[in-house]
Image (tube, each protein chain N blue to C red):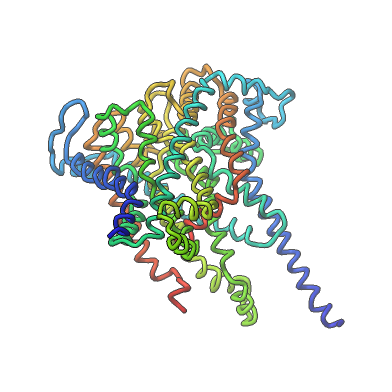
Length: 298
Length: 290
């Protein structure tokens, strides 16, 4: 009895937080999403009207959903490929790799607003670093954030610079592969490609799944870059040329904190949560087919 | 002997070639990662014409260090530094207090429902913050907390699932015998937590400190929605306000904005170089055992 009480006392900060900051607000959020509420006047119950409008009539929401899906579909696979490539290179025992690891990791922990401002200028069509380099190669660079087609690729490009965390997870998984496995494969006559396909890939598949899920969750909530980098100085113009970078969370922010449509914003949050949940559960189900867990095999 | 030599020659050559290729790839990728930093530094030291020069001159004739002075006075930098420090220090203190206590409870004490509660704790990591953001904002507004630091600080009193998880995983690696011996000596749980487990868990505590520092110091969304008065802004928010001046009225220019960005990034970079190992260990724990 005393131990039980002690246990609950120790975890009580989290338990209280769970009730006050997570479970309670979730219920409240569900209720709010069924109302029309501007904070100035009392809430009016509208039932499922917000959801119906959101999924039926709201073209801007449909657009923000498509923008987000496109961004996730580009940024996640390319990010995984690039960070795996870097991790594979760093896994070779070459001198000075600590220095390289530092360099690849550093951008991912620096201030995202500062990073966004840096990339705004790097991708400036006229005076930017990238188009300058392209010009030297005789290529007319795109307008990046000023063009509807290139604004999302520009954000993906920038996201690759911040891929260090993903890379470190891959690197740790690679370093956890016992050398004997490779030696045994070599005895069996496996080449570089054979070893990569039959040993490296299965052994890092749990890390791959982790990075994939975290990547999808993270990218589907993209906000800061789009808020800082696209739009003019006037509040309300964020979202880029022809709404090309109007992502779901940015749309939600505008609804909640620029238009104060709290009920509508809450329903956007629930749709986003539902989509993230479906994507995560789907990944975990599919993972049974391709993720290799050592412990289960033994 | 001769046979041996002959068979090793191509092998050695193969290894050297692989090294060379690895290096070449690392250098190329490394350059791509490094150049934006160098470019930022270079732009921050140009004069008002230099940054529009075509082709761009990486090393200006005279580096304009005074750009940094201009950046420091373009926004109340000292004030924002102070604000950010107050918020970060408070969040850190509260987070470390609550998360270590909770993690100890989950790692060491047996009580009904513990594993279920821990599973719930882990599951909440996946909940997107937007779901609870709106009711929380309305609740804070009702409490009169909007435009104060309270909405940014008070929640850390209740711990954060990711840090609880990291700490618990580390606590599990500390032999239980230490606890049991101390229990036999008549020490209470709080005492064991404070004088045995916490000192042994210093590396994990350091990792959480770093993650929490970087996360709070760089937070944009929280300050953006909760702080309205310009004088209460954080560095990150201040930098965004400076951006609006640059692209709005044009009274401040890009080289000054780049200098300000360098200044805002600097604490991150310094902390990172001091404590790189803790970062990497933290990500490894989170990624591999997660």
